Image 1 (spheres, rainbow, N blue to C red):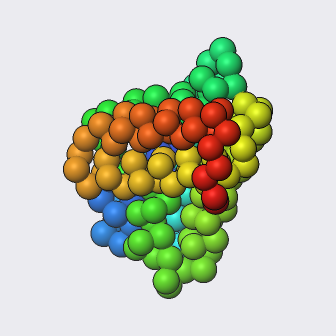
Image 2 (image 1 turned 30 degrees about the horizontal axis):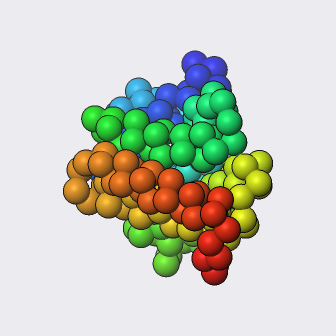
Length: 191
C-alpha cells in the first residue's frame, strides 16, 4: 500500500471516529481496525496519537474552509455571500453525522493538555474570522459587523450540536440580516 493511500485511509478513519466518538474515547487500535492499516504502518505514518489528531484537525480545517468558500462564492452579491455563510451552516448542521464543530470539540477535550491542539483550534477560528472579515469588507459594511457575525455563527454551531437541530443557522441568519440592515442604515453598533 502506497504511503498516500495508507495516510488517506488512516485520516478518514480518524476523522470518522474522532469526530463521531470523541478523541479521548478512540484508541489507535480502533483507528487501525477502521482503516485496515497495520499498527506498524500506522505508527510509521503517525508516531503518536497526538500527531494523528493534529493531522486530522489540519485536514479538517482545509476541507471545512474550502467547502465553505466554494459554497459562499457561488452567491451573486457581497451581501448575499455574507448570508450564504449561514445557509452553508444550515446544510452542515443538517448532515446526519453532525456532532458540532470538530475544533470546539477537540479544544474542549484536549485544549488544556495539548498546546498543539489548542493552537490548531485557535488558528481555525482565526481563519474563519478572517474569512468573514473579508466578506464584510467586500460588502463595504462597517468593520464591527464581522465580529458580530462570527459570534452568531459560533453560537449557532454550539446550539445546533446541543439541540440536534439545524434551526440555529436560520435564526443566526435572521439576526445577521438585521445587523446588515442596521449597518446600511448607519446605525452605530460598537464592536
